[in-house]
Amino acid sequence: MPRLEIDNLSCGRGEKALFARLDLTLCEGEVARVLGENGSGKTTLLRTVAGLYRPLEGTIRWQEPAGADGEPATLHERLCFISHDNALNGALTPVENLDLLMRVAGRPASEEQIRSILADLGLKRIAHRSCERLSAGQRRRVSLARLWLTDAPLWLLDEPASALDVDARAVLCERIAAHVRGGGLALFTTHERLDLPTVTLREVTLPAC
Ligand SMILES: Nc1ncnc2c1ncn2[C@@H]1O[C@H](COP(=O)(O)OP(=O)(O)OP(=O)(O)O)[C@@H](O)[C@H]1O
Image (spheres, rainbow, N blue to C red):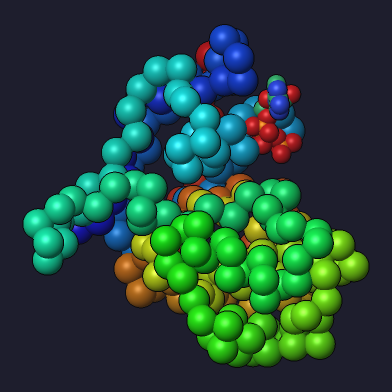
């Protein structure tokens, strides 16, 4: 059964720890919200799990039965990370950005698939407009479209609902809940209220140093 195991994790920016000795196991079909005030290290935790920062101490492991080729999957191969800043190139269109992001993640999607998801999400009109000409909420929705394209089991979502209107937030909540009901795992931060239908939400408080 796939699971994320975090043991004795201390993270910081520079030498100083923001939080210390975090233990967390997230199993198939579990979703957890990371709690903490501004600056407490929630983004730092997600970026560390995503492999973008090195922990000060502790371990982060992905456990999953080996695939058909006999090779165990690595954490990096099994995650989809949506950062707070969306990671979109302003000079490229939503279609071009999603094509690039999916290829970088090792999960290429066809232009047809990308266009179809954007249309399903009500973003057809802006699919070929450069991202620098989009509103904050439109950019967020384009970035989140990866959640409809990826088959990664572990989702790391940093403030996924920021800038979203009420309808877009409801669509996002249903998408996360469907992922979890289907056996996926999700770890997210949010300062907004997110109601995930029919799933049990765990809460993780970052331990003070
Ligand atoms: N580039 C950086 N260099 C050094 N320190 C940084 C840098 N970016 C952030 N920090 C510091 O790291 C700490 C943790 O930041 P982080 O973004 O992880 O917090 P957060 O809990 O996600 O906050 P928020 O709720 O405001 O999003 C903050 O105190 C911040 O000042």
